[in-house]
Length: 134
Image (cartoon, rainbow, N blue to C red; front, side):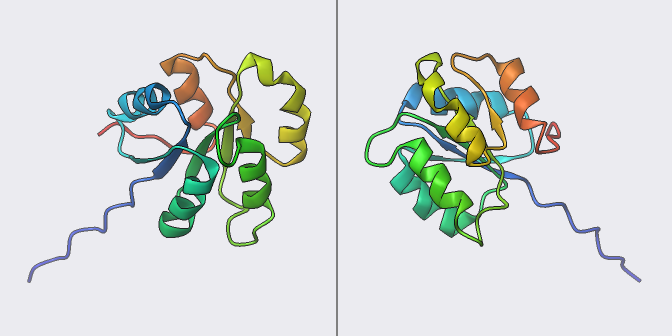
């Protein structure tokens, strides 16, 4: 009698939202050795389509972006019942210090100030997700 293989755990899905292709590529490269999928969006407006379509396990969200910035995107995520449980780590630059209190008040799940290295990114992600090497 054949036994069924154990169901594999779903790979976590991370949505990287930043208007900088370089930063999105950095996130992709940093997370390549881990069992997760990384999707990308270039602004908050596009991120909302990706969030509704794929329901990520974590959102990495830039603050300064065209069309819809990260503060407004975070506000909409956290005010939408179906989305508010998704962890959001904000990626502000040092110049964004004026919005740090706002991001905390809007219940951002973490702040990672740019520029950051791979170690800092992985440490911050591990505060909300269990990353496993592939």
